[in-house]
Length: 322
Image (cartoon, rainbow, N blue to C red; front, side):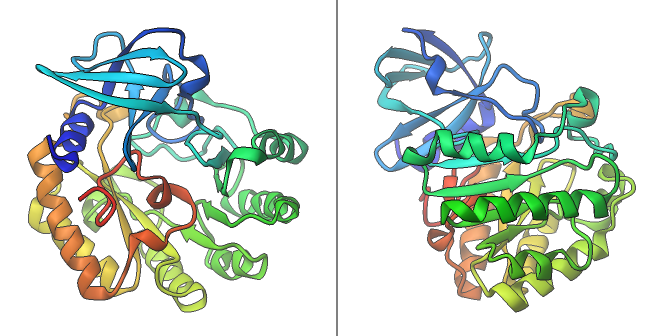
């Protein structure tokens, strides 16, 4: 089975029943986004490819861990040999750390406001990075919003100042103020990700009450201006109710602005638990549109150094999963 077909089918399922030998050191846990508060996830790799799957004993997909990271994946009647990747934090090869695990906003697809996690201290974050320094090549930072957007930005900037010590590329994805791109750039941040989340303004308003759609576009444009192409990213969730044409238009607009879209399959939790994950066929259709748009705009996901496009675990990434 070709990797693109396999990964699209696995992303449609979204989960795996993990059996066999104990695999605790291969399980990653999230403190932000739709996966927050879950039983964790594993990264299954085959050759140079990888996919992230939530651990769920009721999943129709099985991974049997044979020990030492060696694993067999069973899908329908197919057995696919591969291995489990050990995460740094949240994903392999990176320390991808959530600064504040709670949020004042209530985006309908996100579990973080319901969990109400804590904020990590700067010393704790530095210790976390130091503990995995020997097996990471990047640091990525994301965060909820504890009090105000401005206060959160100020705290994250202080975190970034302390992490400069490690001399690794740093990527940051937070809800921004209009000055966030400039302030992160001044601190030497390598890449940024500011998330449109939804393919249309109407869907954004319905899914992200209290957030500003136009502000996201403003900071994306400013980020491209100061960081350059291939250094600015934006999540767009596939499966919120948009049409294929609306998703294609959103992808085209982002790439025309010099932004690399991160097309994230919906994880139906929180206020969207009644929805379904996008089908494997739709994921592949969208990948084709995404690939063409990136090529037309001269954008290359291979150049990503941090965050989601560098990892590739949760999404079909043009040029990386084809």
